Length: 89
Image 1 (cartoon, rainbow, N blue to C red):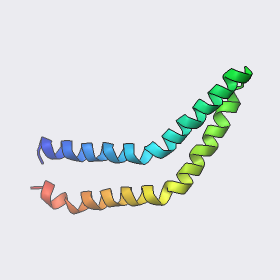
Image 2 (image 1 turned 135 degrees about the horizontal axis):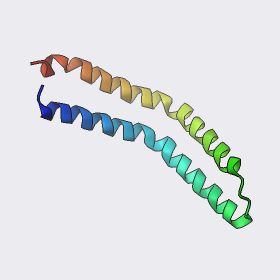
Image 3 (image 1 turned 90 degrees about the horizontal axis):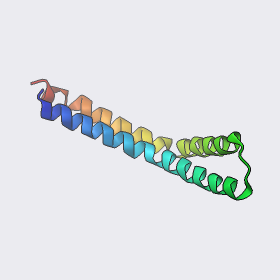
Image 4 (image 1 turned 90 degrees about the vertical axis):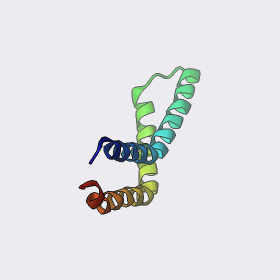
């Protein structure tokens, strides 16, 4: 296995991680931004007011997108396992 193969595997893994995490991180960021604007307008500075809605949204997004995320991870794993003979030369 040469350095190009390792780089390709790591590049693919990083792309999969970014793709899978984007929906939950993006919606968590959006909800946090909305709550921050509401806090700035009302001048209510409560820490749990930002944490709890973001946590709920992230859990709901994870629950909704879990089959899609699992399919992508399983496809990547199958691809890696099937290419072991190629990389072991």
